[in-house]
Image 1: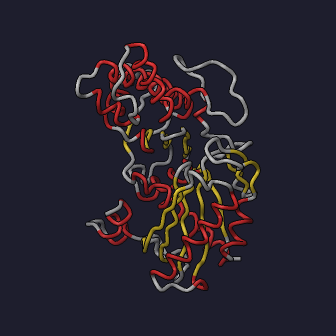
Image 2 (image 1 turned 90 degrees about the vertical axis):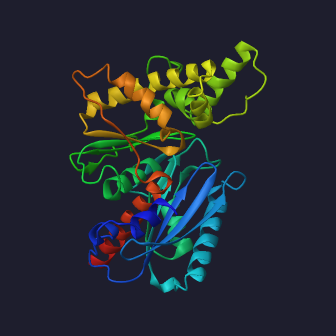
Length: 339
């Protein structure tokens, strides 16, 4: 059972299980999460309760046109599966990895989807689905989800740090989601910190921090350790597998874990100094690794002045983006209804 299923069907009170009605009395919304390797499309009712999910790979079909075609296929499949009419769709919200201009609905650039540069994705999505749509950066979408139904529920100032293939952050300050003048607030994958490369980043390339402790960066650390030590086996491990291996006493895995935790701790401490936030939530496939979280916390415990960084692990996991998408789609539907 997914995190959304648990939230909707679990022991939480009825007020926690559903979205405030906000005047949207009936109908359905679509939530979309576009990843560097996978696409997920979800259907929810007007209370934000999940009805179903559909997924597909984007590894060989990542152009905007092909992704939209996949989204249309996913929506059609969900509508048919749940006997929902196209006419009942109220709105759709999509999360994309990379720099996104929410006001214009444009995906400016992303390192992990080929052909995505200045894509007017909101317009394309509205044309394909025939409903109002909105587009947001995926890390910000996850932050919305965590603030609504996750570990950051009700917090006014926090940062959601997503670490997967790439690295990004969704930032709330004084109750407001921060985008910045140029829509780059939260692009922490480009942060320069001790231990990471200080080379200038080429356009479209992963940033300094991301190259060091993103999923592929961790793998490259591991491969360098194996090469230097002459280790032949166990080279094809994911970042989380490497971190878990560190707990077994593997000294090379421990080196990678400690180095990653140190660099991540620098980044988190700097974020806390700037924002004075209540909490930093770690999410994403790599960010939710408990060995990484614990190692990072041990380092942060040494640095408590003047910032007091508190770490938490995402309560929503991989569903954070979808839950945030439901929230945005419902808000959009209500806004259109008022006007």
